[in-house]
Length: 228
Image (cartoon, rainbow, N blue to C red; front, side, top):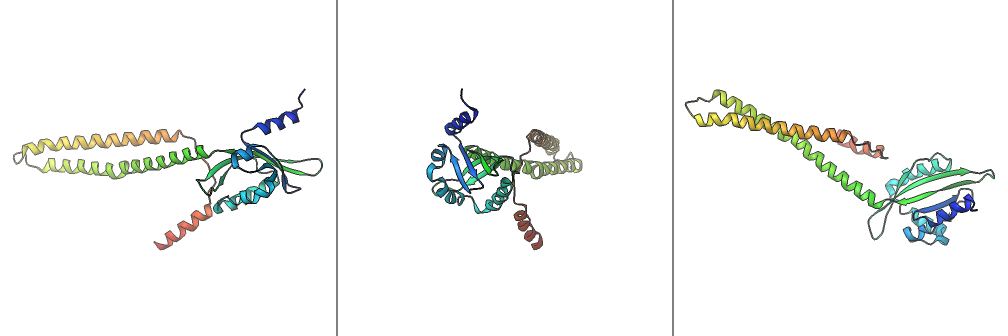
Protein backbone atom coordinates (compact mmCIF):
# COMPACT_ATOMS: atom_id res chain seq x y z
CA UNK A 1 0.00 0.00 0.00
CA UNK A 2 1.32 3.41 -0.97
CA UNK A 3 1.60 5.82 1.93
CA UNK A 4 0.00 9.28 1.43
CA UNK A 5 3.29 11.11 2.06
CA UNK A 6 5.10 8.94 -0.47
CA UNK A 7 2.29 9.40 -2.99
CA UNK A 8 2.30 13.20 -2.75
CA UNK A 9 6.09 13.31 -2.94
CA UNK A 10 6.00 11.28 -6.16
CA UNK A 11 3.22 13.46 -7.49
CA UNK A 12 5.22 16.63 -6.77
CA UNK A 13 8.28 15.16 -8.48
CA UNK A 14 6.29 14.39 -11.63
CA UNK A 15 4.55 17.77 -11.79
CA UNK A 16 5.17 20.03 -14.76
CA UNK A 17 4.86 23.02 -12.43
CA UNK A 18 7.57 23.97 -9.96
CA UNK A 19 7.04 22.51 -6.49
CA UNK A 20 9.30 23.66 -3.67
CA UNK A 21 9.75 23.60 0.11
CA UNK A 22 11.66 26.29 2.01
CA UNK A 23 12.78 26.02 5.62
CA UNK A 24 12.36 29.40 7.27
CA UNK A 25 14.32 28.11 10.25
CA UNK A 26 17.32 27.11 8.13
CA UNK A 27 16.82 29.87 5.54
CA UNK A 28 17.22 27.55 2.58
CA UNK A 29 15.25 25.51 0.05
CA UNK A 30 15.17 21.87 1.12
CA UNK A 31 13.24 20.51 -1.85
CA UNK A 32 12.51 21.50 -5.44
CA UNK A 33 11.18 19.20 -8.14
CA UNK A 34 12.59 18.58 -11.60
CA UNK A 35 10.30 21.18 -13.15
CA UNK A 36 12.65 23.85 -11.78
CA UNK A 37 15.27 22.74 -14.28
CA UNK A 38 12.86 22.41 -17.19
CA UNK A 39 10.95 25.66 -16.59
CA UNK A 40 13.65 28.02 -15.31
CA UNK A 41 16.75 26.27 -16.61
CA UNK A 42 18.32 25.97 -13.18
CA UNK A 43 20.06 23.12 -11.41
CA UNK A 44 18.15 21.44 -8.60
CA UNK A 45 21.21 20.70 -6.50
CA UNK A 46 22.34 24.35 -6.78
CA UNK A 47 18.97 25.99 -6.22
CA UNK A 48 20.03 27.85 -3.08
CA UNK A 49 23.09 29.28 -4.83
CA UNK A 50 20.93 30.30 -7.79
CA UNK A 51 18.14 31.82 -5.68
CA UNK A 52 19.67 35.35 -5.34
CA UNK A 53 20.06 35.67 -9.12
CA UNK A 54 16.50 34.43 -9.58
CA UNK A 55 15.09 36.98 -7.12
CA UNK A 56 17.12 39.72 -8.83
CA UNK A 57 14.96 39.19 -11.91
CA UNK A 58 11.89 40.55 -10.11
CA UNK A 59 11.15 44.04 -11.57
CA UNK A 60 12.28 46.86 -9.30
CA UNK A 61 8.78 48.36 -9.16
CA UNK A 62 7.40 45.08 -7.80
CA UNK A 63 10.06 44.52 -5.13
CA UNK A 64 8.15 46.50 -2.42
CA UNK A 65 5.02 44.46 -3.14
CA UNK A 66 6.95 41.19 -2.78
CA UNK A 67 8.62 42.40 0.40
CA UNK A 68 5.11 42.85 1.78
CA UNK A 69 4.09 39.38 0.56
CA UNK A 70 7.19 37.89 2.17
CA UNK A 71 6.29 39.36 5.56
CA UNK A 72 2.78 37.94 5.31
CA UNK A 73 4.03 34.56 4.11
CA UNK A 74 6.43 34.12 7.03
CA UNK A 75 3.57 34.36 9.53
CA UNK A 76 1.07 32.31 7.54
CA UNK A 77 -1.05 35.21 6.31
CA UNK A 78 -0.34 34.87 2.60
CA UNK A 79 -3.12 32.53 1.53
CA UNK A 80 -4.22 33.72 -1.91
CA UNK A 81 -2.52 33.16 -5.24
CA UNK A 82 -0.20 35.98 -6.35
CA UNK A 83 1.37 36.76 -9.72
CA UNK A 84 5.14 36.90 -10.13
CA UNK A 85 7.00 38.57 -12.99
CA UNK A 86 10.59 37.60 -13.87
CA UNK A 87 12.71 39.64 -16.27
CA UNK A 88 14.54 37.84 -19.06
CA UNK A 89 17.84 39.04 -20.49
CA UNK A 90 17.19 37.77 -24.00
CA UNK A 91 13.41 37.74 -24.24
CA UNK A 92 10.10 39.06 -22.95
CA UNK A 93 9.08 38.96 -19.31
CA UNK A 94 7.83 35.66 -17.94
CA UNK A 95 4.84 35.47 -15.64
CA UNK A 96 4.07 32.90 -12.95
CA UNK A 97 1.36 32.42 -10.36
CA UNK A 98 2.43 31.37 -6.89
CA UNK A 99 0.15 29.16 -4.80
CA UNK A 100 1.68 29.60 -1.31
CA UNK A 101 1.61 27.26 1.67
CA UNK A 102 2.73 27.77 5.28
CA UNK A 103 3.17 25.34 8.15
CA UNK A 104 4.61 25.54 11.65
CA UNK A 105 5.28 22.04 12.97
CA UNK A 106 5.45 20.57 16.47
CA UNK A 107 9.26 20.81 16.47
CA UNK A 108 9.17 24.58 16.14
CA UNK A 109 10.17 24.69 12.47
CA UNK A 110 8.37 26.90 9.96
CA UNK A 111 7.97 25.70 6.39
CA UNK A 112 7.10 27.72 3.32
CA UNK A 113 6.15 25.85 0.20
CA UNK A 114 3.93 25.96 -2.79
CA UNK A 115 3.50 25.69 -6.52
CA UNK A 116 4.89 28.05 -9.14
CA UNK A 117 2.93 27.78 -12.39
CA UNK A 118 3.84 29.67 -15.55
CA UNK A 119 1.08 31.85 -17.00
CA UNK A 120 3.08 33.86 -19.55
CA UNK A 121 0.80 33.01 -22.49
CA UNK A 122 -2.36 33.71 -20.49
CA UNK A 123 -0.89 37.03 -19.38
CA UNK A 124 -0.05 38.03 -22.94
CA UNK A 125 -3.55 37.12 -24.04
CA UNK A 126 -5.02 39.16 -21.17
CA UNK A 127 -2.80 42.14 -22.05
CA UNK A 128 -3.86 41.93 -25.70
CA UNK A 129 -7.51 41.78 -24.66
CA UNK A 130 -7.02 44.78 -22.40
CA UNK A 131 -5.39 46.81 -25.19
CA UNK A 132 -8.27 45.88 -27.50
CA UNK A 133 -10.76 46.91 -24.81
CA UNK A 134 -9.04 50.28 -24.37
CA UNK A 135 -9.19 50.94 -28.12
CA UNK A 136 -12.82 49.84 -28.23
CA UNK A 137 -13.71 52.15 -25.35
CA UNK A 138 -11.98 55.02 -27.13
CA UNK A 139 -14.06 54.38 -30.25
CA UNK A 140 -17.22 54.20 -28.14
CA UNK A 141 -16.34 57.49 -26.49
CA UNK A 142 -15.83 59.13 -29.89
CA UNK A 143 -19.15 57.74 -31.08
CA UNK A 144 -21.15 58.64 -27.98
CA UNK A 145 -19.76 62.16 -27.56
CA UNK A 146 -18.06 63.61 -30.62
CA UNK A 147 -19.93 61.98 -33.48
CA UNK A 148 -23.31 61.86 -31.74
CA UNK A 149 -23.16 65.56 -30.88
CA UNK A 150 -22.38 66.40 -34.50
CA UNK A 151 -25.35 64.42 -35.79
CA UNK A 152 -27.55 66.21 -33.24
CA UNK A 153 -26.21 69.55 -34.43
CA UNK A 154 -26.90 68.65 -38.09
CA UNK A 155 -30.46 67.70 -37.08
CA UNK A 156 -31.05 71.06 -35.38
CA UNK A 157 -29.51 73.09 -38.20
CA UNK A 158 -31.54 71.22 -40.82
CA UNK A 159 -34.72 71.87 -38.79
CA UNK A 160 -34.04 75.59 -38.50
CA UNK A 161 -33.25 75.90 -42.22
CA UNK A 162 -36.40 73.99 -43.14
CA UNK A 163 -38.53 76.42 -41.13
CA UNK A 164 -36.85 79.59 -42.41
CA UNK A 165 -36.30 78.64 -46.04
CA UNK A 166 -38.88 80.03 -48.43
CA UNK A 167 -40.50 77.14 -50.37
CA UNK A 168 -40.57 79.25 -53.50
CA UNK A 169 -36.84 79.99 -53.32
CA UNK A 170 -35.50 76.44 -53.53
CA UNK A 171 -38.22 73.77 -53.24
CA UNK A 172 -35.81 70.91 -53.92
CA UNK A 173 -33.49 71.95 -51.08
CA UNK A 174 -36.46 72.33 -48.74
CA UNK A 175 -37.48 68.77 -49.55
CA UNK A 176 -33.97 67.45 -48.88
CA UNK A 177 -33.69 69.03 -45.42
CA UNK A 178 -36.20 66.60 -43.76
CA UNK A 179 -34.27 63.73 -45.34
CA UNK A 180 -31.09 65.12 -43.76
CA UNK A 181 -32.88 65.40 -40.42
CA UNK A 182 -34.18 61.86 -40.59
CA UNK A 183 -30.76 60.48 -41.54
CA UNK A 184 -29.12 62.33 -38.66
CA UNK A 185 -31.70 61.05 -36.17
CA UNK A 186 -31.38 57.48 -37.40
CA UNK A 187 -27.58 57.69 -37.13
CA UNK A 188 -27.89 59.11 -33.61
CA UNK A 189 -30.26 56.29 -32.60
CA UNK A 190 -27.87 53.69 -34.05
CA UNK A 191 -24.94 55.14 -32.09
CA UNK A 192 -26.96 55.10 -28.87
CA UNK A 193 -28.03 51.52 -29.52
CA UNK A 194 -24.46 50.35 -30.11
CA UNK A 195 -23.15 52.16 -27.02
CA UNK A 196 -26.00 50.88 -24.82
CA UNK A 197 -25.48 47.30 -26.04
CA UNK A 198 -21.75 47.47 -25.35
CA UNK A 199 -22.25 48.84 -21.83
CA UNK A 200 -24.85 46.15 -21.20
CA UNK A 201 -22.41 43.40 -22.24
CA UNK A 202 -19.57 44.99 -20.26
CA UNK A 203 -21.69 45.06 -17.10
CA UNK A 204 -21.93 41.26 -17.24
CA UNK A 205 -18.13 40.80 -17.23
CA UNK A 206 -16.72 39.98 -13.75
CA UNK A 207 -14.64 42.72 -12.17
CA UNK A 208 -10.90 42.10 -12.40
CA UNK A 209 -9.01 42.97 -9.22
CA UNK A 210 -5.27 43.48 -9.17
CA UNK A 211 -2.63 45.09 -6.99
CA UNK A 212 -1.71 48.64 -7.99
CA UNK A 213 0.74 51.15 -6.56
CA UNK A 214 -1.71 53.80 -5.36
CA UNK A 215 1.09 55.96 -4.04
CA UNK A 216 2.74 56.15 -7.47
CA UNK A 217 -0.61 57.07 -9.04
CA UNK A 218 -1.11 59.89 -6.51
CA UNK A 219 2.45 61.14 -7.06
CA UNK A 220 1.74 61.33 -10.80
CA UNK A 221 -1.64 63.01 -10.48
CA UNK A 222 -0.74 65.68 -7.92
CA UNK A 223 1.90 67.47 -10.08
CA UNK A 224 -0.49 67.47 -13.03
CA UNK A 225 -3.21 68.97 -10.85
CA UNK A 226 -0.88 71.62 -9.41
CA UNK A 227 0.32 72.63 -12.86
CA UNK A 228 -3.25 73.58 -13.78
